[in-house]
Amino acid sequence: MAELSTLARPYAKAAFEYAREHGTLAQWSEQLTVAALVATDAGMDAVLGNPSLTSDQQARTMIDVCGDSLGAQAQNFITILASNKRLDLLPEISSQFELFKANQEKSIDVEVVSAFDLADATAQRLADVLGKKLERQVKVSTSTDNDLLGGVLIRAGDLVIDGSVRGRLNKLAEALNS
Image (cartoon, rainbow, N blue to C red; front, side, top):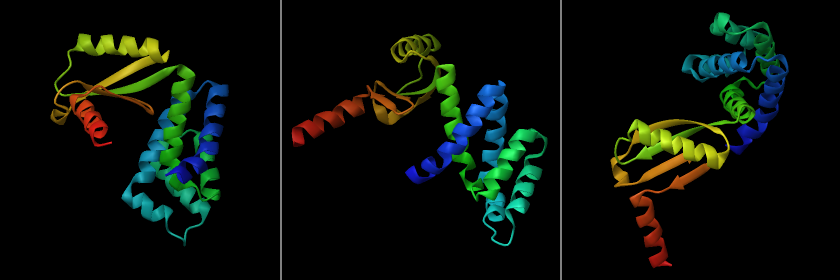
């Protein structure tokens, strides 16, 4: 969905720049997350896709549903999105805003998938090593996947490190077939 990300990027960047200048990154992050969740609701999707509603009516409905979780500036942002027929981009805008925020804070969310449960000490050591390599503060979330057979699969943004037995076997099979 490169098109959605291309359309959402200027809005996400504008919201990020405004929030950074005013020292309200955390508040904007929360507000955009709420707005994105509301925008993805099936009932709200029907409202946003209704051609008989004006952009002002769509914005007002969105703001009313979000309630007190949106500040005045976020409400203005929603109104601008509605007037440009871009309310459907809210989930992507929120996602890109979080990436801008993570880059600003020098942090990254890392998902570690292993064949077995990792001990907390092991996960912390892994976070420390990845933090030094990526030069960021690492927040690790772990999960298990019995299909891996052994080893780990690490996802950090667009970086994927496949140290699983299944991954190694797949690479070996590719090498033998070529």
